[in-house]
Length: 361
Image: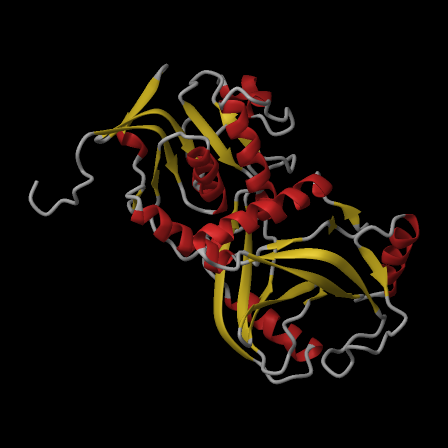
């Protein structure tokens, strides 16, 4: 038809991937390295979880400062994965930082000290409690978490998108599941036939008829971008919220975890809360320049959904990373592609086949 792009002709590919967040990015990256063909379908949106996230890989988590699931393995792998991706895309894909964790209460200070006494990996306590007092208000000292990785999602995602476009491996359009036809040995979508389709489209998969019975636990997060001159970009600063270097004199501040919400839009309440936090915490002038919200595709058991549908082997999912997408996406994308090649196995804790009964409904 006149005026249609040239790619609107019948084509066949090994994999059709829906979504180009950090999950779709690494899945397609490793599939291509393994020699598989693919096409990515993704509609540009500014408020996806990958685009709103700060991109922190933090090796410890929670009030008890425990090590994050699989962190020793995934952190080492992430260093390699992001280094290689950055070289191909000609960008700085990540930076190594430490988190300066200002203790908001004596109880948080004591919890950090207790954990430090048990295990010093990734943790340190400074005797110089006044080091940051010229820039921040804090009363109970601070600890440091090191190393952390700051993944430059704001550079990776558009650069990889261009990388796909240059190879004609991307369609910028809304995926319409009514056009999907699934057979045991393949799928058809509009003019495309593929051996398999994989959904990596974030929270949209929770409404997907093939996977909507999975125990998703979506939560909404909000963040603001703040201009703060003369604040060093050498660290991530934490006092309840994270204040994260973004670019130049711009910092990302967030985030919230709302389990009940009406929409994915930014709220005036969070903006005011962030403004108050900055007034109370940062001693430098600031200017809030942007405010976004997104819904994270988290799961009830805090484990990802990876693998092919037990009843529909041509339909797969690579999703449910929650707040750990930057660390888990490269690890499980590589592991799954190795399993697809027949050169490894998928971790049972991530394999979606653990929900075989639920998915059979």
